[in-house]
Image 1 (cartoon, rainbow, N blue to C red):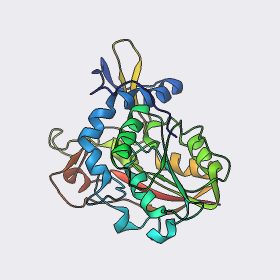
Image 2 (cartoon, rainbow, N blue to C red; image 1 turned 135 degrees about the vertical axis):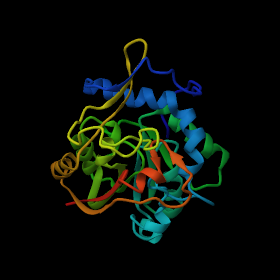
Image 3 (cartoon, one colour; image 1 turned 180 degrees about the horizontal axis):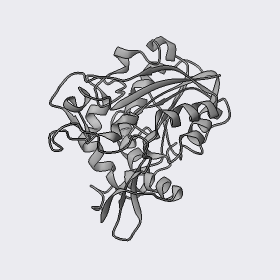
Image 4 (cartoon, helix red, strand yellow; image 1 turned 60 degrees about the vertical axis):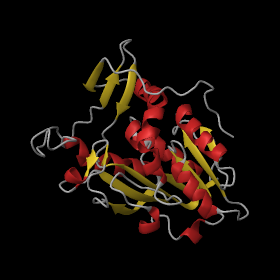
Length: 292
């Protein structure tokens, strides 16, 4: 079951009247996650949707650096997912959920659900599912990461690739909610912007080199504001200390941590990610968190 807006998706959102780093009310930042991704869903899927689906018949793409689950096995072997209850948190149009659904298969008790705050992102996923009726089914639900529509200990595995963590003001309540729905012995594997990413410019050529431009300890979010004064977009910087403290509060142990280097086509650019920048500093952090 999917709860998504009935309005047609916009081609792109309005240009911001102001953009930069400034403090923002946490409630405004949370609402901006829905408003911003609703407005930008069509452009994002048009530019990145095929890449996110993976090569060939598809794969789980962990990061802009180009690494695939079929190569890294961060979730274990494909057989390990058979019959599991899997949540794709911040699923967008469900590209990762598609691949996971094939691994889970029709084993009794197993299911896959994709959750996203943006109804317009989910709409793209619904359209794909309608066009591929023979693909293994998975649920798509519109929900906030702070309040997941699942019972306690009802999920075995949580996957979050490219989403959620950069768009929440505080990691602790989101990870606590993830831990609530995880079953004993369950785990969560998540990719997020590396904390050092914010220290350097996205484009080293335009900025004349990778020179530190911002303090690592400056947690002021990047914000875009519309002409009406409404926050349209908010992206948050979380330090390693923030991440470790949030994991401890949630009772999640960091079992594995990986900083991927660039893989594949060096001419590919994904937002602020490029081979040229990743050669110098890590841009993505991938962690596996296990419920104690």
